[in-house]
Amino acid sequence: MAVESDIIFREPSHEDGAALYRLIKNCPPLDVNSPYLYFIVADHFCASSVVVECEGELLGCITGYRRPDQPDTLFIWQVAVHECMRGRGVSGQMLKHITSRGNLSDIKWIETTISPSNIASRKVFERFADEKNLRIETFLYLETEDFPSVGSDDSHEAEELFRIGPLS
Image (cartoon, rainbow, N blue to C red; front, top):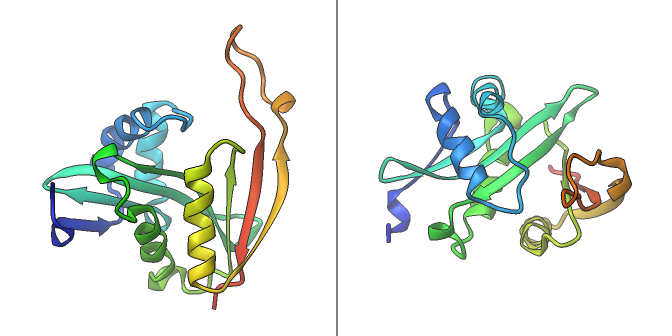
């Protein structure tokens, strides 16, 4: 197991596209998108995303972007941590890393969607808000019925929008 000093937090790069895809694929219950999309994320949204590297392996990521209609809002799309790194506060460290970047210093709000059963994600964002003395507002964003059915056993939980802030 790597020590904390071996962990590197950095922006993703084009070369991380395939590793991002593999990481997300191995972190249920996250929705897995096409490999192509993760190259786009690594290229186009690197300034608002972070990866965790340890001993040359990509073991965590937060993918996010500035909302085009609300440039003071950072939307966190996916948070993933490899099982070997879980329980070490890596998700919270990634959130702190992103929100401390100079290029995002004007961000006032963080938004993300979380399904009701994803207790781990809820705890990460609640802990972050508590530590920074921020408020959290939640709204129903998508209902189960909003998702298209693509198979007999393929259903998607509802998604709640978490709005956290204002950041100072």
